[in-house]
Every structure is written in C-alpha cells, then in structure tokens.
Image (cartoon, rainbow, N blue to C red; front, side, top):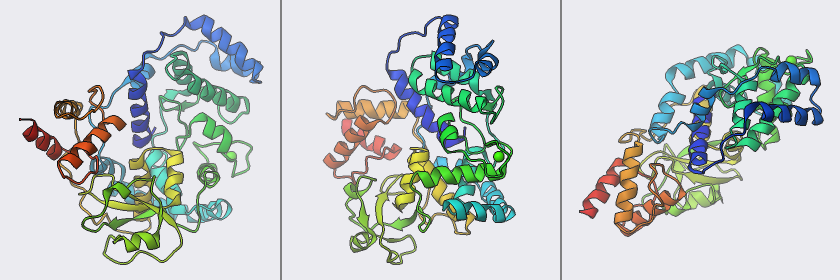
Length: 397
Ligand code: CA
C-alpha cells in the first residue's frame, strides 16, 4: 500500500487499538464456519478449497495492524516523500509515453490524464510496489482478529468472488491490509469498480495498463469527479483572515472568497468561475494555504487523508508542468508521540481538556489546542508545533 494509504490505515489502527476487543476464537473451527458461510454467499466450492485450504493467520499482519506511528505526519515531511523530483520526472515521462491510452480512458470516463498518473505514482510508484503479502491470508488474519472483523470479512468475500471470476489466482499478492494492484484498490473497490478495458475478459490491475487506468478513472467518475475542473489551487490568505473559515465544512463561491481577500498564490485574482470551494490550512496559519474544489472531495472518497488529497492534487499540477508550492514548506519538524504527550499534559495542567493523554492528536486534543490559542490570543488554527509547546511550557511555569 502506498505511504499515504498506509498512514491512514495506521491511524485507524491506532484508534482501534484504544478499544478493548475480545481475543479471537480458535482458528480452525472459525475457518470451517467461514467456509460454509462463504459457500452460501455463492463462492464456488473449488475456489474456497483452493483459497482457504491450509491458510494460517500471519503474525506480521497483526503486528503491522497494531503498529502506532512514532511521529505525526506533517505536510512538509509528507510532501517530501510523496512528491520527490524523481517521482515528478517519471510521472511526466509516463504521461507522455502513455498519452494515447490516457486520452482514450479520459474521453470515456472524464478524468484528466494528469490525475490518473498522479494516483498511480502515489499508490504504487507507477506499478513498482504493489505489495508482497498473500491477500487471502492477510484478510483471513484480519477477519479472524475481530478488531475490524466485519470490514475485513467483506473484503475477503470480495477477493474470493474475484478469484471465482477468474480475474486473478488464489496466490494474489497485495498490501498487508489487502490492497491490490497498481492503484492499491481494496477488494470491494476492485470488485465494484475495476473494468476490463483491453477486452481480454479479465480485470487485471497488475499487468494491463488499459485496465489499470480505466479502473481508476471509472472509480473516480463514479465517486463524483468533475472533468471540467481541477482539484483546487494554492492561495494566499490575507492578514487577519478568520481562521475559523478554514476546513471542508465551510463552502463559498470563488467570488465570496475573493471578497474576503483570498488571492492566488502569486497574488492574482481568483478565476471567475462558478464553483464552490473550501480553504485548507494543512500546516497551520503559517504554512501553505489552499482553496479546494469538488474533485478534492472526490479524492477524499478514494483516501480520506487530507495530506493524501493535497499530494494527489499538487503532484498532478507538477506533472502538468506547474512549479513547486509558493509558500515555504519548512516547519520545525514533525512532533513525536513524546512531544504530543507533553503537550497534552501541559494543556491539562493549564485547564484545557485534551482527553486522556495518548500521544496522538485526535479531535479532543485539537479542540483543546484551539481553546488554548484563543485564550492566549494566538491564531486559532488548532495546529500543534514545537513553538506552541514552548509557548505552553512558558505559561505553565
Ligand atoms: Ca483486461
């Protein structure tokens, strides 16, 4: 699975880890029951025998599912990995090399080629990393583990149906969480949206570029992609901009944002088109600011991480020849779990409620940070930094 999707899964895992879950039932009787259930759900007996015979839980998958990130992700550290010069160069080359195919796919499904190549680069580094775990074994492990059993049970069923349909063999490989192919589709997405664009009867997201690009485009178009618009753009916010207006909850027309003093990153006026947009401040009020459109929300359907969505958008822009972000990406480094723990304890000591200190920036901690910032007459962007921790330390003395 690509870095961003993995990060999102890791965050979800950390949240799941906080809950206590009953230990898994004995494996073999559980597997026997699963087999007869899936047979009732119309998976062929031969497929079940081939896929599930001899399958065993994979301890490494559980380990990866329970792993907690050591550092919070920042826009700076994320973009550095996700949008390297090398990736931009390869992406531009791919865009040229596969131009004719991408045009055909784009014409049929209404997704601009630069986005298809950007997703491809982020998900599998253009097909280089599609995962080494046996997907059936990984999904059996996670379904048996009970923590997110229902979700992974659905994923397992989808994989079995796809094997049954002859789209790939039982030995299919993917990420530890079962994401597959060049765009790292989870099995239900693969089952519901992958298409056979080269007409060989198989939906092959490993070896067939026509299937790969068309499947991504089909999924995006069914998720609400707008072929006539881009994803959003970097902007400049005016001094004294009301930070409470940032976030996807607030949507305004470009004309309204223009009247509130928002400009393009180069200082120019916003385009005069009739679209609704939200302001994003992913690195706090000091970092780069963005105006995001409908396609940004569609990228969030694919992966709910905002850093991922911004990376797809910005990488697509770079592939189309645009330059780097205008605002500086430098920050004072990502925060470790220890840093966040200290901040949570300081917040509690100063009378703000960050919840039980757990070293992670969840909604309660963000709320407490914002309350602290308002109290200290700092811009309330709810964005934790080392400078903010120093500010708290001084106040707590
Ligand atoms: Ca095919």
